[in-house]
Length: 383
Length: 93
Image 1: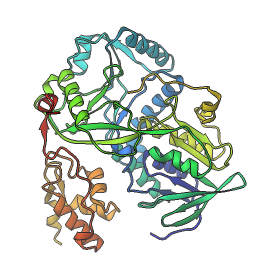
Image 2: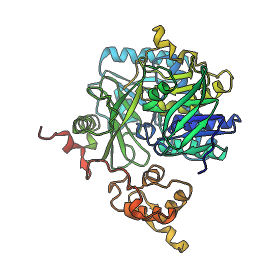
Image 3: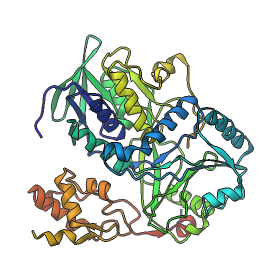
Image 4: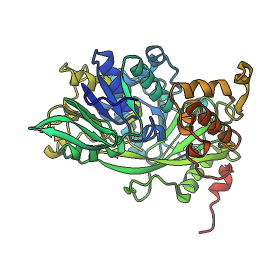
């Protein structure tokens, strides 16, 4: 592919965030957009994620983002012209402690006030929603039927293919090694393939976004933590249709439409070494969770385990803004494990912001200056 | 190549044909891992034991590179499928 020395917008990162931002900018009429990806498209956190999509959140911002994204996913196939593997079988939240159940109910009231029809379900009904479920030790459950999961690969490729049709250029195997600024404004990027001058640069580098920000002279407190996950061989549908999730139980488990069951949890020791290896400890711990929670999976085989990076902020909510000290440098990062599910909405809102429009959901609160001010928007509902 | 060969199933786990693999290579999905992400080739119970070599040869043919230069893609544990109940019992520490 020929190399052009200039662009109107450079997006750093070929995950779902970068692809959604590029697509939404092109849809709004921006002509010369280049997406740079150091590996291949969807090779980072997006392609390693648990694939969940939910509106069951504990802060108003995340509820609004969650519901807006669910609504986007519902018509994404039509908009992008490619099946994104959407499966809306709901999220079934499982509380094992009274305090946890109270928090779920508090969040449910907030969700209900924002048009999200989450409800409390009994254990009997939970077993109808998830026939193989064994959770007699749970205190309570909440359920939202429009939550679910989609295919992160297909969703990202759908955004990329739609963006390409609108003229966006994608450079794979191209790593950004420096970000150029002049007089408090962005000037462009330096990459392993050459330089590109651009008045707008977007940092959508996922687990590496704090390093790209630092190249631009922008300090964000994001850090990246390794989380592990596994997948089984495909089995008949109906073993675990919804996303089963518990904060105290420390798990999320769902069955994809093709039959494989995916499960992950929060890591012990919170590894921040940027290694994406796999551990026996995780495999053993997660397998115990599977057979306790879904006893019928005892004879189901694990075919693959891997890991990926959560790019985490101090309040587990994203950084979505323009930098104060470097105009033209925009950030979309720090999704703390939820970058896939929020990409349809965050990509649209940031594209509006870049074009000087008012994003239709206000994102002022998601500026990284909140961390310095101590004005955190702490999200309680995170595994 | 005959059109007929396009119907041959290359990845038996996910039932992906040679025609589909050629179609996505032509769209720029020129590495094994990219084809894996878009078509699920190599993601089934055999983890690519059946299809990987054939797909690498197909990438080599379409890109004009020697097959030895085509990256074989990522290999992930476990080496063979293991039942959850066996894993849950734990191992020797």
